[in-house]
Structure formats: C-alpha cells, structure tokens
Image: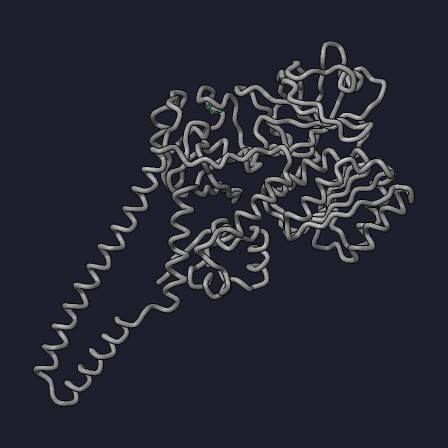
Length: 485
Ligand code: FES
C-alpha cells in the first residue's frame, strides 16, 4: 500500500528540520517520488520514531519559539468551520477507502466462486493447484500487514496534522509553508517569511491575487469584489481573504528586493529595550492595515519630528507587525531621542525598505552569517529569516566585536541550543579585519558549497571576500553589506 507524504509534513512527523530531510534525500538516504516520501520508506528510514508521541517535535518547536525572542506564535485551533470542513474532507477520504475495501472484498468473493467452478470442472492437478492458491490467499489475507502498528500510528498522526494545519506549495518557486490556526494564506506566508505581493490585507486592492492550482480553500473574509468573474472561473483567489482547507498548490510570485515598493507608514513604539550601555533595541508596531513589506537584511529611515536616522531592521519579516531596529548611542537627534525620552505608543514615521542585502531563497547550501560589531542587526534578521524558512543545510554565525560589543550573545547561544545544525562563535575584533577574517576562514577550508552573508566595515569585507574566494567560494555565493549608517 502506498501513501505519499510531502517533505514538510515528513519533517514535522519525524521532528527534524526540513533541511535535514533534504540532506538525507541529497545523500540518497531517503528515497522520494515526485518530491514526496512513501510511507513505507519513512517507516524503513526512521525505525525508532514514536509516531504516537509528538512530544519531541513540540519540545524543539518550543525551544525554537523561545530563541526567536519576541516572536509570537498563535497555536490556536483553526476556526470551527474550517475544522469542520477539514474533518469532512478526511471523512470523505475514509469513506472512499472503505468503499474501495468493500469492492475488493466483493472481487475476492467473486474470485473464490470462480476458482471453485474451475476446480469442479478440472482434473486432479487443477483441483490441487486451486486448493493451494485458495489456501495461500487465505493465509495472506489473514496475516497482519507488515509493520501494521507503526503504519497505523503514522497515518493517525498525519491525519491529526492535516486537521490542524494545511500545507501550501507555491509555484513556480517551490516554497512551502503551513497554514495554522485562523491564518489566511497571506498571513501564513508572511509568518513563514515568504515575501508575496500584497497591499491592503483586507480584500480591497487585489494586490495579493494568486491562482489556485489544486486543493481547496475557504473564504474567511467576505471581500473579493476586486476579482472579475472570469478571473474567479480561472482559479483566481485573494490570499488575504482565504485559508486552506486541504493541502493546496497556488501560483504566485515570490518577490525580490527590487520588487518591493518604498512605503511610508506611521508605527508606534512598543518598547525601548537596553541591550547594552550603548545599544538599544527599538521595538515598533506597524498599523494593522498597513504592515511593512520588507525582506530580511534591508534598512529603513525612521523619524520623529525633525530627528531622523537610517537603521537596519533586526527582526524577521515573519514577525507580523513587529519591527525591531538597533540604535547605537551617538549625538545624532534620533539616537538621543531613543536613549533619553522616547515613550511607549509614541509615533515613529518609517520610510523604506531599501537595500539588496537579502537571502537567496533558492539556495540550499550551508550558510555562513558574519557580523562585525553593529553589522549584527541585518545579520540577525537574516538568521531569523533563514530559520523560519528552514532552507539551509547548516548555519554558522560569527560575530566579531570588542569586549562589550556582543550585546545579544545569549540570543545567539539560544539559537545554538534550539537548532541541530547551527553553530555560533563570538570573536574578538582586536586582531583587526584581516586577523578576524583569517580566524573565521580557518574553520572552513573548503567553501565551494557555501553562501556567505557578511555585514561590517569595507576593510573587513574585503579581507573576508578575498580569503573566502581563495577557499573556493563561488563569487555568486558572496553577499556583503558595508554597514556605515
Ligand atoms: S492585500 Fe489587498 S486584496 Fe489582498
């Protein structure tokens, strides 16, 4: 019996990151068919996994959530109507399976009668052969299927997962994400850090239009009057107005840095958090109706009255309305305001995003994230984005700073604890750009299969890039950002 499962769900079932599953496929340790894994193959490759207990998956997820710091996950049940439809779909599947079983039962009974007819009219050797065939059939039908208990537990676990969440695959990019709780397709994509096009988030502008290729969606917000009837007939849906009932495939464009228009929004101060004597994290909340579209690694202009500053966003686009920037203490007006008298709920005007220091979403190679002092802000955003997408095979984070400069060391250590393939090392910047670059590269003698994202002063980036290319890094794998805001 074949039952195929998509990779993202396999990762959840076995409590492993998706990148680990991809590594196993890459190394021929796990076979796939059309990008799916057969249930029997899953049982073979993971003989020790307890399917009836998702405790391990929950534990990893909890640690991961904690490591994200401010990120808020809604672990709500889906809306009761969505839940009812998913149960109905599952019921239909079971009904179809049962009907098929009854049909097989009938065919078997018919075959038994036919064989008896043949035996009655045949000679002794025919009768003997028919008797043996009937005995064999009886034995096989009465025998318990191979690994029946584990297969049952796996199917039960997978069914529960499909009721709680639906998987979405985007064509042609191949990105995947889960729709959980009461999220719309748009909210779930943004939560997963996948930059899809959108505008109003409430069904009015039509910017989030996509095409439903397969699966079932349900309208959770009433508006879709911007869609023409002909478009609807052709499968067009608004991602901000629909949720997924079953696993779905949609056709939509995943945007790059240059596709995102500059936006001007008025945010509110949620908190000013002192990360060290000289660095503060400014937590801002975007309006519900005008969330900021940006990619990890980009920067924005912030202003309060006539005080203005340019800052990298240090949070992940997957954090919904939350935007975090790191502000260094200096004599400029905006910094003074943050360190002296910025109050909760005060408005801060934001214009942006800008910059092309963003993740290459189609690369699955190991990634080195490297920050020099306050170049950490865009690197933090990129790390969190990479974590939410679970695309890199392995991640290494190096942060060079002076003795007091690793102002979020604990957060980086929490990432190491939470993820299997994440290595963090803080480094002293006293040996200078060349010395730090050499110390990092000494850990990576062969960089032919790697991507590097580095943010810091030009001298450091030059030393690092030259050294990395000498270690085999492809020029396409280099992503450097001179941080001098
Ligand atoms: S974002 Fe405006 S209609 Fe969906």
